[in-house]
Length: 196
Image: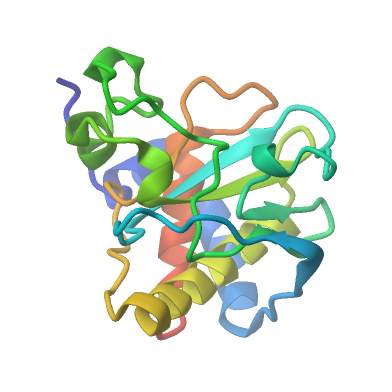
């Protein structure tokens, strides 16, 4: 089992300068989010409450015609966000088999997802970044989107989304210059700069 390290340790390893640069902007950043005209509203989450947000990278153009393959949210290069799936429904983007072993789970080193042995799509919110590498606008949007998701989950389910590195995670083995642990630690820390 991989040791779980804190967001602070991740930031120290990756260099806190990037975080410092973005802190002032994050305090006043305004999220530009739109709902897709054909938002997927499906069969719900089979009684599960979402308590994990999984960030990943869109390695190809999002095909809105394939409704079953859409994430909850996409953060575009300019920082704008589009919601494709209702938060009260599961997205199949990071779906896992409920019969799978720990080795077959994405982000298998991260606490809850590795050890639940349940379909992660039922209790997670999926967020994909457009493009290679992440822009500053995408980082700021990701932090604001975390606040938005936190408040929506609280309103819909009456539960608080834990803002820690067991619950704000990244999909493993992403190409495109996405620094998984470091970037999700930045989103989480920037999110905490404004009260949720």
